[in-house]
Image 1 (tube, rainbow, N blue to C red):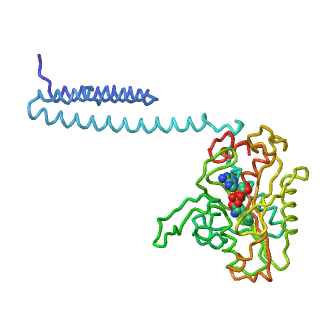
Image 2: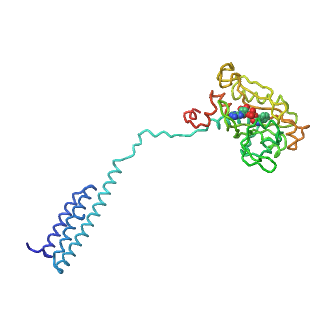
Image 3: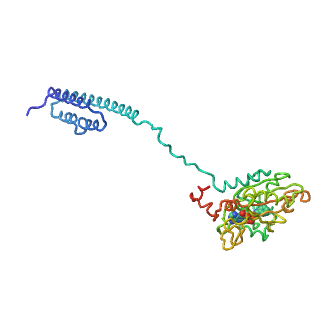
Length: 356
Ligand code: FA5
């Protein structure tokens, strides 16, 4: 067998470059390009094997043939690079003309959020009172014992504290008191508002309340209230009834029945509760689990502001009188929309929430 020489190598390497370049000219896709690269420049490619074969030449021949081999390798890599660029450009041009945006396709529907039913009803309630001259203020959910009870004529040890099962935030202090709590009603804002304003006062206070109590169809442990307070010279119980009747008419229409009954709250005198006839049994009562057989659903407590509360904030009870009320928006929404269980409001079931 004849030994290869640098001369014969030069001929075969030139052949190899020509053949490779010829094949490359006919390639138009990336898969074939990769196959070409493997065939010539891969680990077992034709040029790679040629370069390995040079090891059999003597030193001088190997030097000359090696230089030619490396030159050929550089040339093939250069050709590969050019071809790869032109294939990519051709692909881009093709996709720009073929994959055009079809503006006639129907659009994807936008999923839009909506307000929670409680937010909607709270706004509706506040709007009803705003059109009657009330302004809206808000207060803290973490309250002090002082405002939640003391300023409302409910001192420590008063049995009426049991009416509001309280969630305490703080540890008992040296005086045996728990100064911080989650407000059990929005009434603490009565004193806060009066302390910072002079009469006439006309405000509604929407906000969240918390009570440590068992839940059922009409009771949650956290719920909203809207407090109302009007104080001025010469305000009477007739103003209270007139305002609340008008409120009920605006929210429920004139067909719903409204009932006032005497009730006790230490911060009003006299005190009442206001109820609307039950939507589930139409006020029939018997066997109705919503109104617990009574035919009525209580929506608020109300009354004439107690003289001690007025005096406590520095108002002269001989000069000023006023009325206050605290209503439950979820109960009002239940009546308005026929919702049978208050717990649906906060169980985050989208099938329920998306109906509003
Ligand atoms: C009070 O909380 C008094 N602060 C209301 C008040 C204000 C009276 C001003 C006089 C003057 P009561 O506990 O009854 O009262 O609650 C008032 C309203 O809040 C109820 O009529 C009801 O609509 C709503 N409510 C009370 N407890 C719950 C509860 N657990 N779940 C849902 N709503 C409730």
